[in-house]
Amino acid sequence: MTLEALASEIATAAKKEAKGITDAAKTEAKGILKEANTRAERESTQIKTETVASARQANQKSQLIARREELDATWEAVRDEVGSASMKGRTGLIKALLTQAKGEADKGMILCPVGIDRPALEKASSGFDFGNDVEGLGGFVLETKDGSVVLDYRFDGRLEESWNSCLSSVTSILFGDA
Image (cartoon, rainbow, N blue to C red; front, side, top):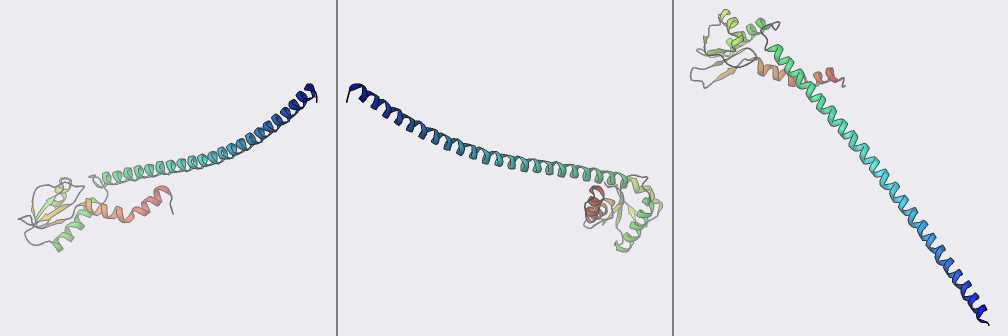
């Protein structure tokens, strides 16, 4: 074999081997690219799912905060109305509480009115001695002379009990919940 033929054969073999290496590299690159695309798609789907869940959670939190603020504002409006001297039925409520107190109180208890209701209570000539004013939306407390027993007839506690027992109805009215 001549040197030229040998060189030609070596060159052909080298080209064949180079083509095999190149083809194998291309096949491996395609596999790596396919795997990377699959992983990127999977991660993209995961991120999308997490983003949607996070947005939903943020919306729910915002709704709950808005509901809480609305309930708080409603509570304050109710308290303001009940604490107002012009509340409709205030005198009748005071008289009803006074009648109840007369049936439950021990003799000699001192009536301590909420300041706004002192005139109405004094006018009702309750039969109780009057003490100092107490804080509250309305009504009064009765206490023994030594302060060991206190009966609370203020609007505050009764309003809070009513609010708590009717909270689901209030929520339903405000937000249309079933």
